[in-house]
Image (tube, rainbow, N blue to C red; front, top):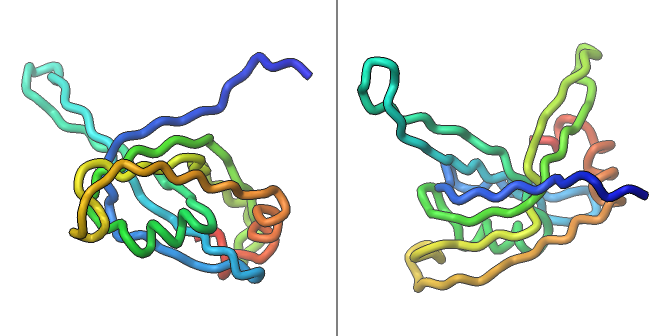
Length: 145
């Protein structure tokens, strides 16, 4: 197999909302976090303009439980993962798509733990394809978000 491609995403940004944690039918925790990254640049008129991009990130199992317990809106976080596009059909039978970041590493930056202490611990979720397939087959009401 040829190894001529890379699918890797690295973000440093702030949580845009508190994590949304749900559970698969097999009991695995899965969290959606929204990470905002911003950049400042000069527009054509020479004025500074801020632009924010929002990134939908999916975190699995123990890391999802950690995120639920310790992370809140506004916290700075380092996220590393890969892009994945899912396809499903809505209730009317239309094809729908979502591109998300499947998180491999999540590192809280600065003070974290909902105001309790600080640290720089790395968390490595490891979703397996069986669980991801089960989530995709569970339908729109279960997961995806």
